[in-house]
Length: 483
Image 1 (tube, rainbow, N blue to C red):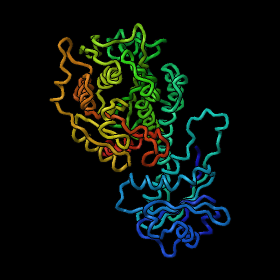
Image 2: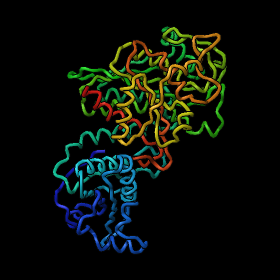
Image 3: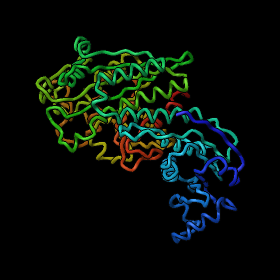
Image 4: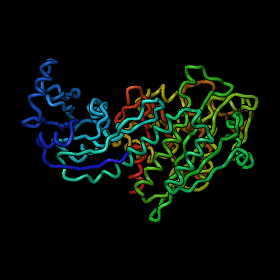
């Protein structure tokens, strides 16, 4: 989506309405005197037996006699970014529902630049077209945004890159499974690599067998055709002094394997590749901004199907690092494909590693779908990512990476169990399992994406699949680059 941006310091009603018939008014803390569109606003509030004091509870929309639609929202400086994003999303919903080509946004009060930036991101990310295969789904898009009340827009490039990355993440995640098999996904990534000037490499099933990547192959072997692969996308910058590795779980469809899911829990399992979508989308945002960092994006792309060759309970397989794994549950396939991928990534000795995966049901049991959980082998890294969650509005909770949980993975026949039959603390146990496959003690954070989908939308994003993890990581990257 190509947006034409403009800005004006003047805040009079006529200049705002001259630009667009769709207007967002954002007040921060105190209401201005006089309030823009005062009479129309008071009439709307009277009709619902409310007063101006009630604006702070929820956004108010009003339609003027000339047909203009105005949405009014009051933010508080004391509110978190997440709370402010939520209110802005609610305020923008009736405006964006009409698919305007022009949008006016006026901000009043404190911290105007940061509030304008936040409002612009919420508007931009929710104005994007997502995959729709209905015959009448071709809709006009937003073309022009004018910010009233600010003197400059220095954040436009970063905001556009983040919104575009979030949209790519949601688009990949929402693509139907028959249109995004591992083969088709890899072709799509090759095309994207060509557009973005990334290096592309892949290791197919036969190559991974020859390398000894038995954990990945165990999952891939049950699917026909044998089109699974580990893919590496690389971005390089001449000014970079650090290298970041992003690792994503890319299970294009998850039946559960021999431990077959019921229809209720198999619904939506084409979205089990969301972790890989997050990783690719972060890479795109870095590339769009030409950030001074080298990034390698490692994607474990496969399907988990049932069949005569599918792996099964009590199998013992040997991972790329030589560790033998006793299979306990075939629906714990994510940690298997990630294990060998983490080993490959760590062998290149990046300065930090982050992996993204829709990995465990127990993380969703612990947090619901409003936050995601992280586990890290570095307390400093965990703290940085948690702080980035507060700043970006994509909230995360830090869970312990405690060694005594390893006893749950003791096996009588192999070096390690894949998981346990119980679900208690599986999010921590899964992280302990993954940590065994990282070589050279590299700083690493695991992001378990329990909030990648939330029915009413989450924070800035109105759609159920929300692209969680993209803005979080781009915010953390600022700290990583400043160290």
